[in-house]
Length: 442
Image 1 (cartoon, rainbow, N blue to C red):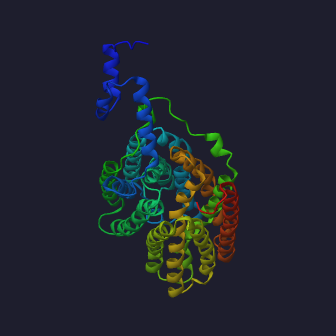
Image 2: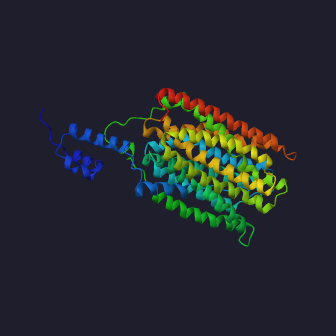
């Protein structure tokens, strides 16, 4: 059959939609050029760079993009359970937006999400500087709702980007990318404490960090670039993520419930250790820095766990389970953390093991997903379910603590037991997955 000559409109469309590198294929027929392009994209999807300037820049960009805000530094006079609602709603929104954001990320809207999320985050932070320091609802709206929405748009794209660049070294890459929140918590907690309680004051103390976050947001947006072209720009029909397969994946669902129980308890020491220490006669200064020690050790835990998981490959699941078991056991140590040495030992151990699990939790999700293009949806689905657990967790623990009676032992034991419940579900999930894959090497 004789090939018809291209019209000017067809030539223009082809020049606009195909890269310059495909100009050598202009003499090929459409039936020949499209499969070549499709195969090249499929090869690109399967071939992970495992390094390089662009890959590590994406990991480095995730750090400045992930930040956290210290509520304790801003509000001091409200009850711990009331303050906990600000952090809980912030965490809820970060996790809740995971499902739709994961889908949009897979569809190629990475820069739209990160850019818009950064703008909302910075705007909310500057609005926080206009709030009265002890006006609970103003701080709740600016920090809990506004910052939560901004971080919700940023978190999944920044974290998932590492999955597109790394497979063999994925655990380390994701762990490093997620250290931004811990670093931000350390610097911000110490910095805001000195600024707000010094000559600068509340409003300008917040604004100074707002400008710092603005610079970090710009750096993060410039460093992070998706490896794969957006689906809407790829020639030919594109496979859609099998959402039904993901949602009905029983091993994945059990794994999500296990991580949800972990998250339910994981943040308890971060919210209540400072108050626990002060009420047990430890100096206010050391109690304040106990949260800094916790966050610093999560960074060490993330890096060490990532190196171990990548070094021993298929033992990732064992590292995840081991770090979770040790974190649950360390939670019991908090009962005896009523002295200076006990508090320091607890914060070091708990921070390290919780950081180790946090770094590997997202990486372990990839074992349940066969197609890299479905990773955003799978991670978003995971976070969507987890969001409801983190929303109610700290207020529930606040009720168990029961101020001013402060039944600390009840809350600590409950937190540890819930972590062990998560371990049981994770173990069952991994056993079912191994049975399905007919191997433990995943």
